[in-house]
Image 1 (cartoon, protein in one colour):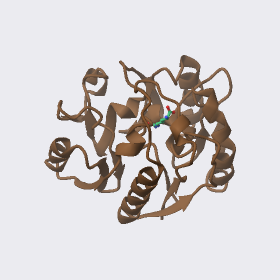
Image 2 (cartoon, helix red, strand yellow):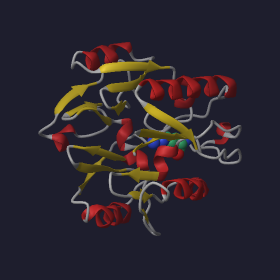
Image 3 (tube, helix red, strand yellow):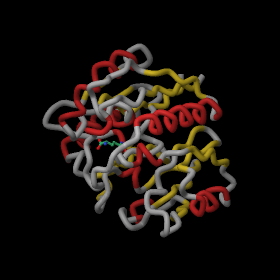
Image 4 (cartoon, protein in one colour):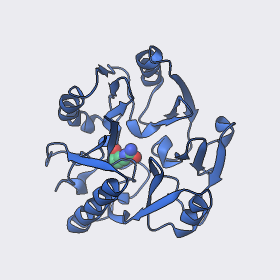
Length: 254
Ligand code: CIR
C-alpha cells in the first residue's frame, strides 16, 4: 500500500513564510479547493490519503514535505530552516513513528524536506537558505546505514532544490537550469522546463503518474513526450505561499 500524508490548508496561510515571492492575498476557499483536487490526484495515483491533525495556528503546516524524509527503512525528522515551522514537527513525528524508526536532526542543523530529492539511489540535497552544511552532515549520518549517499547541490535564487529539480522517471529529471547547475546530475536524462513557465520544475512522481500544476501546459507536453502520464492539478493559490505539488504530501510506501 502507498500512503500519502497531507494536512488541511489552515486559516493562517496568509501569514506563511515567504523567501522569493512578494506577499499577495491568498483566497482560502480556492486554496482548499485546490488542495482537495490535489488529494484526488493522489488517490488516482494509487495512494490512500490520510490527513495529519489540523494545525490552524501554523501558517505553513499544509507543506508537510518539509518536515520529514521518508525512506524505506527509516524516516528522518527534519529541523526546518524557518523557526516558525518547527512546531509542525511533533504531530508528524507521532504518525511516522507508527510507520518507521524515526531519526531526528538536531540543532544547529537546519534542513527542509523540499531540499531533498531522492533519485538514482542518492539523496541530492539543496544548499538553500533553509538547509545548512550541518543539516547535510546529519542527514548523511542518518542514512549511511541504509547505504544511501548524500550529495549537496548549490542553488541560485530559489526556495528549495525541488523547486528546480524533480524526478519524472527512474533516471529522468525535470530541471530548471536557471536555478541549479545541471552538471550535478550527469548520468540522468534531463528534461528542461519550457523557459516561458518558471515554476514548472516541481512535479510529484508517484509510481507511473506525475502530479503537475495545470498552469504549465508546455512543460506538461515535454513530460508527456518521455512517456510519463501526467495528472494536472490546479495549484495557483498555494504557489502564492511558495508551495508546489511535492510540498503538500509525504509519500510513505507501507
Ligand atoms: C515556506 O516558505 O516554508 C512555505 N511558505 C512554503 C514551503 C514550500 N515547501 C516546499 O517547497 N517543499
